[in-house]
Image (cartoon, rainbow, N blue to C red; front, side, top):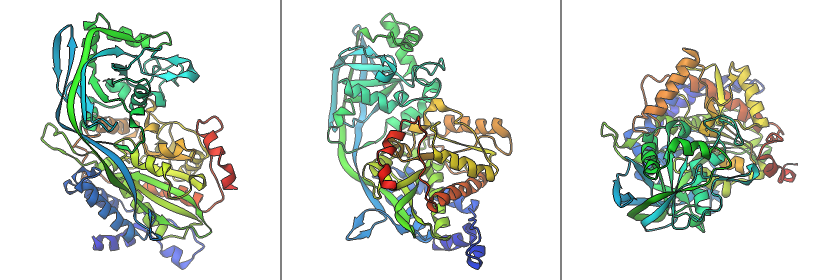
Length: 555
């Protein structure tokens, strides 16, 4: 490993010109072979899928810290005896269902037992419960499960959900029609599964089951099964029942259609009604839900890895690069019997990018502002590591210039364009568009806003607190093959690799696109770290007001 690191400095960073002439422009080179080697290591079976609170975490932390040390970064984590550690401790509630959960629907006295991972995917409870025992709970169909007063929208219409299990649709009411009060095809937070569980808890529901449909979810049932039937985590909350109902899960569309039909209801007709303000919840006649299972629930501590370069003039002002190191660990086997969810694209690519950006900054001219390289835990469990950092920042958020996030980068050949996760507007986006243009890339709006990517990656926790945040999306207009080839790759990845054991390192990956794109991301961070610029959200952004409340800290 030391030999690799020694070679990395020569291969990845070309700084001879800078050494000879400090005033010359510093242009780091990002070596595709080194990126490939790091992704290959991080996604190998030896790392066991990089699950939090597993031996895979221990190996991952050791590897990333060694790489950051070799790159020339300094520790930027928790203060211990007056010195910074390499990590930030992240306390998490860990919950795992013991054995296979028993669950069933009773329709007019006929009990249909359900199989975990087949018709239903039950999540381990995150309300702290050691067991779940639901007996014959009435079932209510509640449309999209949305309460949006500012849109004059209420799917619940005052129905009391205490002691009941609600069934709701995924995404927003606008998804199918593309027009309406929720931004058309672009998903709002109301469309995210996290919101739907939160709203069910606020309504006092015993449980919530989300109907899976591939297009509005933006992924297939395999992803739902693999992401929800394994160990679950949450940040430690004072009152977790205010955020999580006792039962959280998903059901297949066919099961939902059958249940509604048994009550004399038509699924497609009800869905169309649910796309209007006039929709009213519908109780399923003579239908109840039961479930019983034990839970291994405890508080554990995972870690964010934090590397840092201190600014020469404004060390209290921080530019953050972020990426998550975790994946799904070991879970249910696929058709080939593979149980290790390696997470090569998601997100060994982002972690390798973070390490190499750190190396570039460490071997270049020292920035005026500090630069943080934040490798967060438990993204796959609900953006928990980044949420914890944003709630407990090591460096003042009001003086954090921006968060530049990297998640699931394309390891193939170069593209002619790039995008961002979601369609949020900010000065930061303007900066990156300008820099990318000088590097031969044009900007494309998020090609799939209905997927809600803005709410699905680690920049979201920063955005919620007003920090300008941007998550880089690799382009889909490939130099070789154009948009057709780019979309073909993405569809194949989503269907056959995303959150599946098949997300493994491939020897055919060139990493040429990542190598090029990291130059753009370096220039963006370097520009912010060597200026007095404080980017902000657009005037009509929902995050602008939060940022503006701390404007005095940036004078």
